[in-house]
Length: 88
Image 1 (cartoon, rainbow, N blue to C red):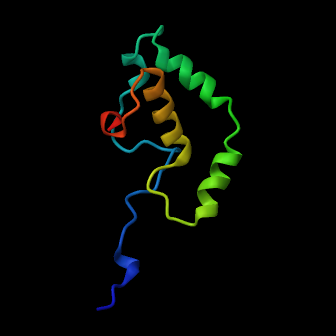
Image 2 (image 1 turned 135 degrees about the vertical axis):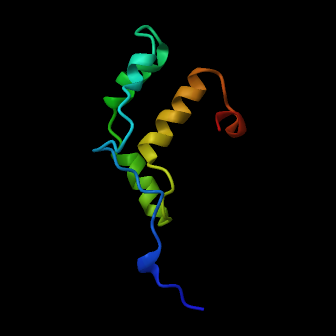
């Protein structure tokens, strides 16, 4: 059975440039002295070219943007969470 791929939507794409309906600034819910804001500030200054090269050399389709996954794992490690099941 052939599947017409033009009808299949890719729900894994990451769009960083717009927000659809949710008009809520989530940063206001995070206290200003929280460690996650410092971590975000530090991680935004990094060069991610080598990270992207490593992902794209494998040739697999990405399900999560590598930069976002790196931020999630970095925050979990900073909170002493090392299990991928606990990170979920």
